[in-house]
Image 1 (tube, rainbow, N blue to C red):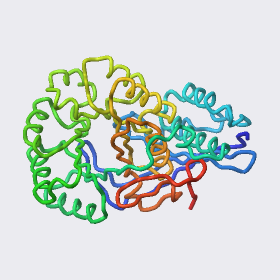
Image 2 (image 1 turned 30 degrees about the horizontal axis):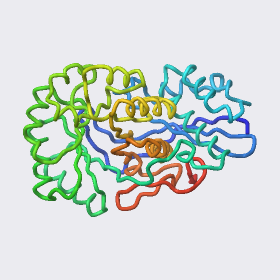
Image 3 (image 1 turned 180 degrees about the vertical axis):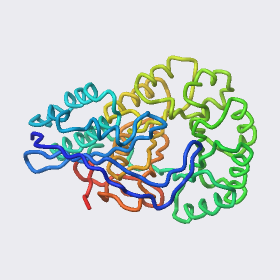
Image 4 (image 1 turned 90 degrees about the vertical axis):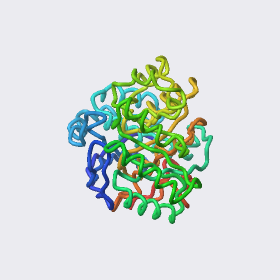
Length: 355
């Protein structure tokens, strides 16, 4: 099976429910869509949606590099060269994590269609279902309770609460959630770099009785060394997100004295399935658990992340709700979501059905 041609398209998937995080308000969603066509009529699909605040790249930047001229080296290549093709993509598109991830997802989809197996099967599936957290943005206590009730009525098992703008209100929101809903639901939190060390210590003192097992990226990226001063009971709950963009970052974190408990891997940060697997391997060798996150993304890339997450035995949390609030999408049925639990259908490749 050889690559015949490649199409790159921009799609506004819109957002059914705008939300706020510590450093921005999100009101619309544009994704880049990659389609790789084979000479046998198969199509591999990929998608990308960078966060400029995290990777320093916009969607426009990605489209600037994804030109026919720069993609020419892939045309006519045998899809069985998958690992060599991914190596060349990582080498040729170093400046664009979006280009790398969009192309790699489409290649892995096409390759595993050729093998007639799901991508998770090819990668070595260890996990077959897991509850995903669903995110509540920064809002007041009353609105937080209202949205939480909606998600619990839809049978979601874990809420992820965005924090980081008002420390006192952050604590109040979590305390109130436990008062109203008890301890039968899971709660994890994401401060999106919104705290100082002093804030984090004060925050933890206010919530340590609330059974919060994971605190995502409380400190700004670049302040990782400050975490050394934190008590171990806090460190083991910290998931690094914006501080972890590459396998090199993962190596730095495990070789330092920062004994964080979790790596948050996002395909949109690390620039490819092949790079995500490397980060996962580093975490596994060093006793670090995995959380798999996302941006506001098409089902295409959410499904790809789920396949990779299920191939890692140390995946503890999935936060793959990025397609759930989209007003529309270009595909359907990449994953199965039932009562807040995600699983994969038994279909070749990513198992996508194009709309």
